[in-house]
Amino acid sequence: MDIYQKCLNWLIKVMRLVGAFALTAMMMVTCVDVILRGFGHPVIWALDMVGFLAVIVLASALPYTHMEGGHVGVDLLVLKMKPRNQAIIDSITSLVSLILFSLVTWQMFLYARELASKGEVSMTVQIPKDPFIYLVAVCFGLLSAVILSDVVRFIGKAVKE
Image 1 (cartoon, rainbow, N blue to C red):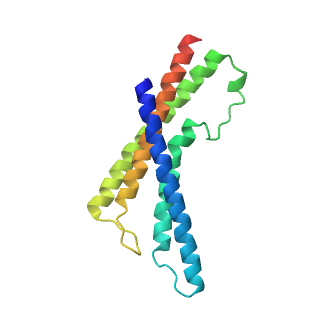
Image 2 (tube, rainbow, N blue to C red):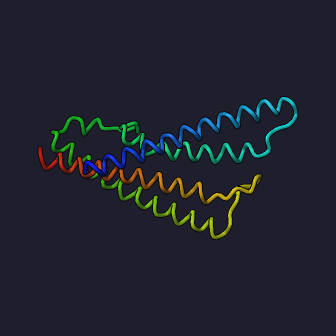
Image 3 (cartoon, rainbow, N blue to C red):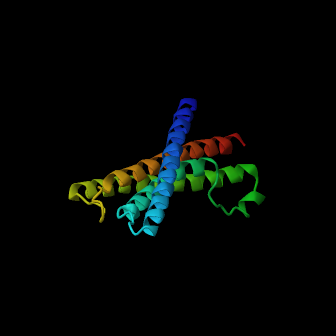
């Protein structure tokens, strides 16, 4: 499990860098567009690029945010339970999340493949959409891998308590 966690952490670090690069690029494209609009020469492809970059930023943040516990959770009732019961509930909710996000990953890959087969492109600059959807699918797969490690940890905690 240690090697699995190290690989997972490395992949998440890579995705954080990809997201940071995309956020920086999104900011630069927006700034250039705003400046050039002032001179009457807007960047025609800015809307497409900002949209694609926003997809990358959001998707790449999912695994890291989950790993850091940054998602909103309401656990008022669960906090009053015994540690073993908390671990059981966390195991069940993590397992349900794993199933859900594994299905989302699978469907995103299918959707990207469908877009690729149809040759779907953006409206302005004709950039293919499927690579971005494949990246989103990979990020959801990485999120599923993080949730899997949570499932194993919570089950181990429930058994130990």
